[in-house]
Image 1 (cartoon, chains in turn purple, yellow):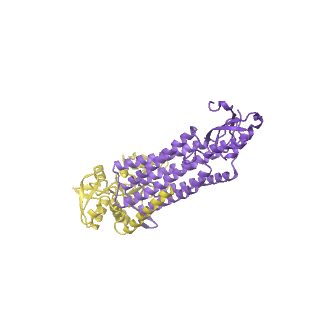
Image 2 (cartoon, chains in turn red, purple):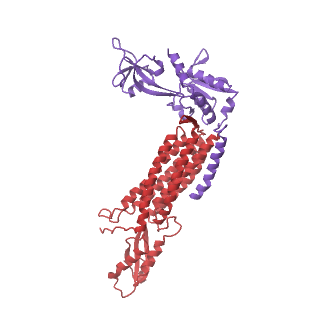
Image 3 (tube, each protein chain N blue to C red):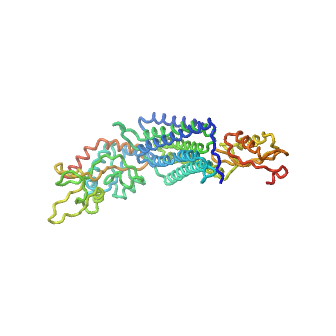
Length: 318
Length: 232
């Protein structure tokens, strides 16, 4: 089989991509520290224990990103002639699924707690020789577990949009789930303190609905990507500008009469077929690469398009 | 994402501030108001019979933890209403908030932990193996335990061989038991297990739990002395 030329990242995007990798490592480190801190203070509280199990799933999108980022760099070879670019799309599905599982687990757990009318209790803990209500310690840990995801999410979002990275988006959804769960748990702990036994589970269930909705949205998007949906912007608001750019790029070649494109996403890159109707009397066979270069120059994500020649009157029936 | 954060953060901050202000007297609170009811009123106490912690003799509750419970009630000016049932029925009653406190054979490893709220351990002590031997591990050594006791399992976990009777003509093996059960002149060969003794209150009663925990916090030495007296 023909082996593709590897995709070249533009210098500025490559820099952002490296920053994303650093941020994802930071995310794993931050989440590990949150898991540790929460593990130390969770005590016998069932609600904290649940939050903790969800924290353990938290780094999955970040891990999926790092693995995919590594695979994606491998040049196409005999075994994978089209390259490893799709690994990013697969990582997106993995990260989205993890978010969905976290949300569902949280929802089921807390609805069960509410239905069974289980009342959480928080007692005393000794800190440096002083007796302290453990709720305060839990709130401190929860505030800590809330700050890091907010900061990291803030740093990641612009990069995700710049390099069109959906795994980062899924990861941001997980970070959002993390801090929202923590916020709900703070409300819950305070509720317990006020003697409102249902407050903890109710707040968590409320937040869980939001996380499930996020999870479903991203799983659905990831599946549509893998089924080669028309490339769209990261927020899905509109068709990706690279489609129109590719068409215009091909049209800008002087011997091209008309153009139609058939594009799909493979992780970060957009690829596919560009159907070109040449003007009569041009030596198209020797000038075909001009179209390819023009298309690739039109948008940094456009990669290795196949240029197909079509006769004018048959266009549209192909 | 950030806008939602901006909405939630002030709410949480406000909650933390208000509850900190309330922290002086009635925060945290009970879901069912147990502490308020106990103060100058009645406290309903159940017993899981286990000597020397709590048992009933001639219709009268006795034991180290029963004494502690009496002091606790006296501190709140509360009359004690002892439960008519004991054992797991008492814990079941506690779970359904028909009792305010259960004392007796409870440790923090008890499987009831998810249905009732345990206090912090008020006393921790080791289960030890004593005998005429230098300190060391139990590997392959016989340790005398009561039949059908958790000590047998703990001895086995520690590598020893639990036996329930000494064969005639054999040298006396090591003996396992709680540290308070042996006189100071007995040689401790090995620590087998740690036991953490707790009281139980209904779930959701935070203020009551804290009141019981605060009472128990200074009673470690007292409980130990009572157990030692009981053993000798």
